Length: 133
Image (cartoon, rainbow, N blue to C red; front, side):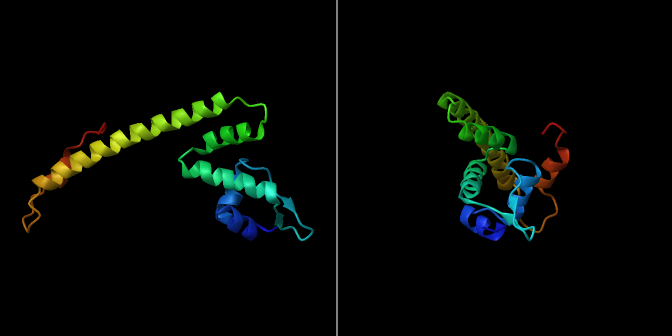
């Protein structure tokens, strides 16, 4: 099947499929006599796998590792679980970071009069931010 069909069946845009091929995340597709990329069901399944992994926020590097484990029938599920638990930790850290950002913005918004006056605590706070903020 051509890249358009593979894209439709996998849920990934053709541009993403080409990118994954370019960076070596997936092997180069076979080619038709006319030089067009040619995909089969196995390729589509791998693309679906990658769509799912990326949808859960796994990095390209982590996807490479997960894909290697997916292909390895002698893998230990503990290896896969360790990657998933690491991702959960990343998500939990990001949630805490977002909650802190929300709290800060909420406080600033509450301090801002939101009227025609030019003074604004939100802008003042942003201007006073140190490089580590």
